[in-house]
Image (tube, rainbow, N blue to C red; front, side, top):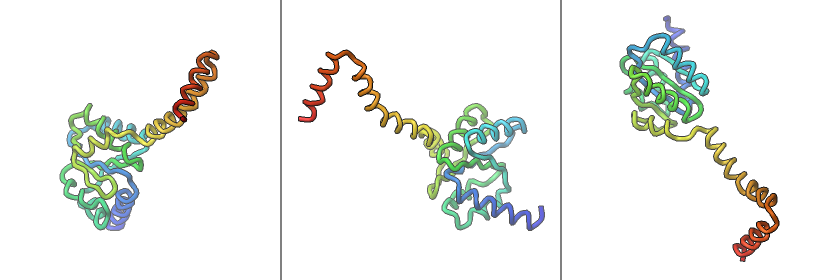
Length: 170
């Protein structure tokens, strides 16, 4: 790899560190090519990416970035998993590490905050953006479905519901 290619790679890694919601650093010693392709496919399906880069170049790319504190994790055979969704990459790597003991989570970064392995597991336990949206929509839709159910109920039920609402309002 010549100097121009290295500079381009450092620039690409810098963009990854700046634009990603979460970056997870893990050791991958002993993982086969097929297993790595499986991890990449799962990450792609979740909207993230997996990148193997030289540690020295990644450390150069981290200089001046908000997550520069993860530079000390970049030793040995490391793989970077990242996504714009602050939870997706952590979820995929955590799930994959449970099934493949060759992938060892070292830590990561979420915005300005550096995460240790336990922090990555905690982020992975959080609901994803899509799950949060679904929860909010269900909360918003619940009162409307209750009213619709009440309207479809027999007249005696409607009268008791209306009196309950009137008592609450008073």
